[in-house]
Amino acid sequence: MQRVALACAALALPMAVLAADGLQYNVRINAPGDLDDLLEENLDLLRYRGNPRTDREQLRRLVRTTPRQARELLATEGYYSPEVAVRLDDNGGTPNVIVDVTPGEAVLVGGVEIVLNGFESSGESPFDKDALRASWPLAEGEVFRQEDWERAKRAIVRAVVQTRYPRAQLTESVATVDPDTRRALLRVALDSGPEMRFGELKIEGLKRYPESIVRNLNGIKPGDVYDEAALQAYQAKLQDTGYFSGVEVSADLNALLAQQRDAAEDKQTGTAPPATIAPLPLLVRVVENKAKNVSVGVGISTNTGGRTSVSYDDLAIWGLRMKSAITLEQKKQNAHADFYFPTTQDGYNDSFGAALNRDDIEGETIRSASVYGKRAWGTPTLERSISIEYLNESRSIAGAEPTHAMSLPLTYAVTWRKLDNLIFPTRGYVLNATAGGAVLPLLTDQKFLRATARGITYRPLNAKNLFIFRGELGVLGSSSKSGVPATYLFRAGGDNSVRGYAYQELGVREGEATVGGRYLMTAGAEYQYWFKPTWGAAVFYDTGNAADSLSDIHPKSGYGVGARYKSPVGPINVDVAYGHAVRKARLHFSLGFTF
Image 1 (tube, rainbow, N blue to C red):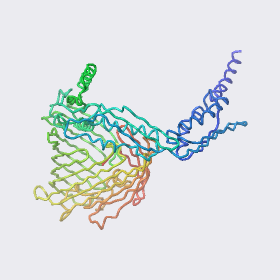
Image 2: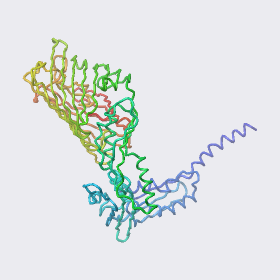
Image 3: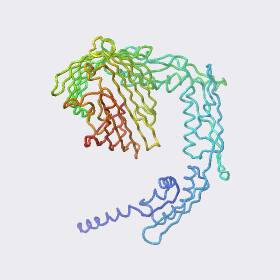
Image 4: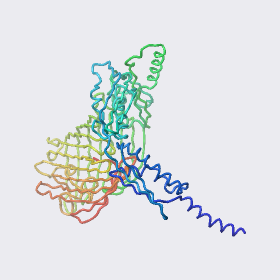
């Protein structure tokens, strides 16, 4: 009997699974544009298909309610007078449901009334109400979509709370739709609340490091109007110093709450609230990094092969910050120690250091020792620096006598950035230019001038389609290439140059080796398609070369396909590129936005 019961249970199980699948039926939606996607993603008719509780009677109820639900969904896209017809074919077999949609003409924005209450300023520069009204994104004549309406309201509030009036709020929002005239009249009212200004700087959490590290980076002065962008910029500067594992910059919330309590008491007693509130202290909370830190890392690069590194950082040595490391790669080895002064009150970042390098690339071996100093200043959108370096270098290639060169060049560099996002850029550009050289006979075997220019621009078509264009130029002028350190010459090829070729494979042939040239020209174009928010695919074409004269630059091309992933630490790029000149395919891997 137990065996019979088990057999019945075994038969009953698949029957229960089949019953749990619910009624299966086909749905076809005939609607223009993207409206079919809207209905497919939101109609109950599709949401409950296959639900265990869905039977034929439930299907008929879903069919009856579909026109009303479809009209509500279409209204969110601006179609308030659509025609929706639903047919059910249930003559045996799998039921078929056909939804025909004729949306009609969309409702347009007929007028916008923006009422601004408050916005009284205690300073000499009044708030620009006209500019705020002009920034309203949902203009007259545009299709009235619910999503755009909500986005516009959020945008106008955000534009106010980010500067001067962080307590502003929307007090009224009305959209009056007339289906007959197909026009929507919009009205929003915004109350500014009191104007807020910054007070004195307060610092919490400092134990190991001097206050000057925090104060010298502060560009916000007492009396400045509240500006969220200024807070974020200040916080980013502090995070970039390396002294802190956590940084929070804000207006002092406790002081704000105290003033809010006072305002509430004034309201109860009938006292008029002030148009402005007392300056709020600028509060900086930090969590300090350990003064000394040792780390070990291993990795691999498609440019330079396997890598092992050991780094040692000391954030409080002689009042300076030191970063040092020894990095061993298959093609490059490096040891360096850099010392950084705290940022000055004028915004200058001064540093100096020393390094030992050995490169073994394309048959050329370069050993060098250098000492250098640098001053950098500016903002994330405009960075500038001036540096001086003494370089002593020995160079050898197979079948030739080793050579030696030393130089003391001075270099000025400038970088312009205009990007929508510094980690995952999708719009804007970055330009970098350097100019300098060794023009004095001091510690220099061969005088020279050197200049470079690099650029990359991002051109989106929409959220899923993106074009990227990049280029690089380099030129070195000297009476002779002999005596110029190979470090200052140019080569091309690799992950962030001309893909399809090995790292610095393109240059001037000298015996069995490839060495650097006086001139460099590279360019690249890439198309990315993001089929998911974090996953994309790419096709690209790169070209370029290095040579000792412009007439000898014969560009080598590489092209291929790649995968893109937006990881928490930055974009991951994996490419397979074919080098046309070498007739080989090569894998390239890079992490992060590199420029």
